Image 1 (spheres, rainbow, N blue to C red):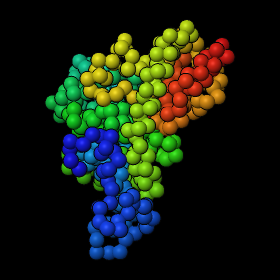
Image 2: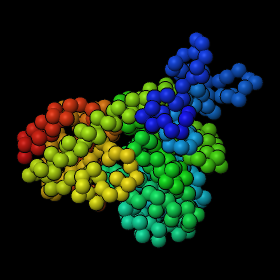
Image 3: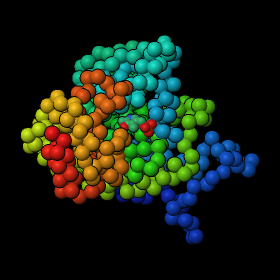
Image 4: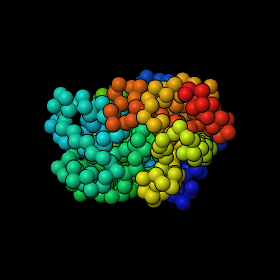
Length: 370
Ligand SMILES: *Cc1c(COP(=O)(O)O)cnc(C)c1O
C-alpha cells in the first residue's frame, strides 16, 4: 500500500483480498485444522489466511511484519522466551500487572534477572540497560499514565545491545508507532482497542527485523499459543473502525479529564492530554493523540473510590479497556497490582458514548458514593 496514505485510510484498506472479478471484499475465516499437501501452509498451528490479513494490516500501520497470538500475554511470553537463561531484563516499575507478574515468576525460578526502573526517567533507564538483554517499555503506562521518551530510550537500549520492546496497547498503532522511533519489537493486547468490542482475547507482535520475526514465529508454532481463525477475523473486523472509534473516545477522554480536574473530590487526574500532566510534552512529541485511558485519585480514600466504581449505572464496573463501552475500576482491587499504584486510583477506559451522558453518570457516582 502506498506509504503516503493516512493511517486512518490504511486501517480500512490494508489486508484485503486481491481485487479480481468475483473476489470477496472481505475474507471469511477458514476453519480447517489441516491443508492438502503440496503448498506452504501444512497445518493449522502454522498459519491461516485470517491471521495473515490481520497481521498485514497491523504491519502496514506499525511499519513491520506481524504475528498474532492467542492473547496479549501469549505474545509477551514469546518475547520473554527470546531472553537467554540467566539473561537480564529491564522493565518499568509501573506497567501492565500481568507482564510484571510474568517477569517476577521468571525471576523467582532463576530464568532471568529483572531490574525495574521508572520508565519516565530516561537517565535511569539508560543506566539500567547496560548489559541487559531485553528492555521492556510501556508508554503510556498502565494505570499510572507515565510517558517514556521513546526515541531516547530506544536509542539507549539499542546502544547497549538490548532488544527494545514497546507494549503499545494504550496508544494503538494509530497514535504511536514505536518501530519508527527505534524499537525492535512492538507488542499489542489486541483484546483492547484493536478489537474494540470486548468480545475477543487476542495478541500481536510486530517487528521490522526478519531474524526477530523468525525467532518469534518459531516460538508461536512450538509453544502453540495460537489464536483461532475466528478470533483473528474479529480482530481485523474491529480494527477497520479503530480510527473512528478512537477519535470519539479520545475526545470524550479529554472532556472528562477537564471535568474531573475541576471536581472538588478529585485530588489528581492523570491524562497526558492535560497541559499540566508530567507526560504532556513527550506525548505531544511522539503521539498523534493522547488516547482514551485516564486515571484519577480521590484524596487517598480507597473505600470511597471502590464505592464510586459500584455506583455507576452507565459505566460498567469491569476490568479491561479499549471497548466501545466505557469501563471503570479501582486497579488495586487486584492483588497483583503494583503497590505503588495509589489504592484510591480509578482507571477509566473511555468509550464512544455521548460525553454528556458519561459525565452525568460519573458525577452522579461521585456524589452518591460519598
Ligand atoms: C490487557 C493488557 C495486556 C495483556 O493482554 P491480554 O490480551 O489480556 O493477554 C498487556 N499489556 C497491556 C497494556 C494490557 O492492557
